[in-house]
Image (cartoon, rainbow, N blue to C red; front, side):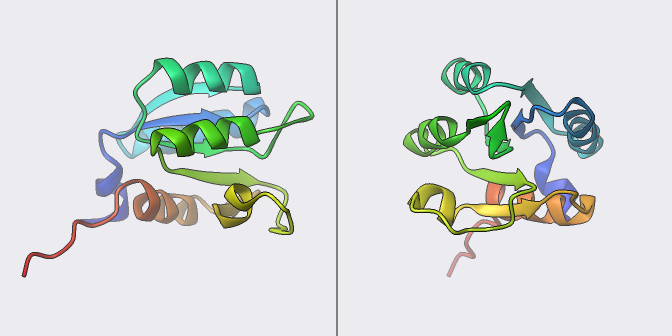
Length: 130
């Protein structure tokens, strides 16, 4: 199945505080048949979405209006929901294991790279039967 086909029907939370970037991501997701949840431009709104909406994966900007997205990442991890960091911060140099270990796509992103990462992280191929 193609990367785009693997995403069809997934509910993806978009956590991004830059309106133009959020719209670009929304369009990309909708073109691949995803249901967009959000976008959430603050940590508070993102947490509310995570706690009240059913989501299959999330795309998180690291810095939302000067606040770290860590509480959102922790809540997603607690719920077993995969996420990808979509950020202008390329460094993995942090003492926070959940952020250091997360899949990261650097902004400005190449749409095909983001789609491939989402297919890998949100909709991995089922294991082959013996």
